[in-house]
Image (tube, rainbow, N blue to C red):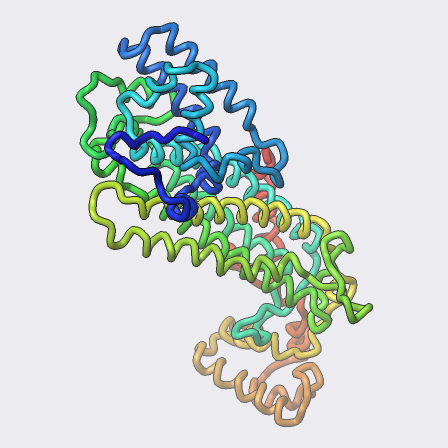
Length: 466
């Protein structure tokens, strides 16, 4: 059984039910490697300020490295700490206990000048400093998979939708690249959050600092922090970095879920824009013909879990008095769950998108409902000097006329066109073409093939190092 880091003023051992309720190694064991790094930096600092000898500092650093190596996670499906969960209060206690096995009573000196309060905040920050850049690269790889698919779909025009109703023709690649822009903002948000995780809390103690001559600036340099927290109470109470991470991940999941919804629709027989590879789809236990887009459906479903993690963390913090409270133990399940789910989701999505192919049906699409070109007709007449409102009214009446007769615009005679658009010539029929429609766009960032090709070049260059 691991020794506790407290107990001198207690006459009784903790009740087994309370142990079961409050012990947290099963969750905060995630911090093992980060806390090893923090403790090594702390040991070096203690030796530097002569609170321990140089030899003691070296022994502690070496023993901590041994612990880190022994309990390194080699298989994500295995927990090397599982055996210790029942009788070890938390990751701090576990490391101290393992340290004692290697250096004896010297292990008792590692906690000099620190509290679990400032230690856990520091370890969590170090964990995020290591984890968020990895997530950033996974988002970038997913972006790259989308860009590659967009390049393959460059010559494909689809009906763009508003209100889930056909609106105007757009390039499929233009639609796909919209998600790359969203994902890049997600990367930016997480990097911004990471930039606010640069003040070292270690040295704040439980809440009031320490009377020992510690050197937090040295520890900050060792761990890659740019500075030291200005207020010890804020340092141990702050969980803004948890909220910012979860908020950034929640917005990312909004985008992942919206993309998943599009691909679910596009993969359906009703749309049939994309086909999934067998290796990223599943079947039905009853219906032999089914091939289901489970990855996208799970993304859509798990988004709610991530949002819940953010909401639970906001609720956790909203009524806490300063400084540390045990409630804060509950920030880690939400944080770690969100990071793990996001990491795996990005990997699964990158593989799935990479193995998507564009259907031949959509490659050969021509608009059967050529009301899609109503805006092209409107803008054509604006170019001829008709006011926008007047042109809008005339084209609207033309569409109603065709709809009442269950005709497409292309089925109307020239004389019928002239009832609403006086002076129109046979060139009007050339406006009723998907590629012609997208090619007439002139504004920057539009669905014009030239603009989309330029956008593809930009993203390929930005993501070339991924």
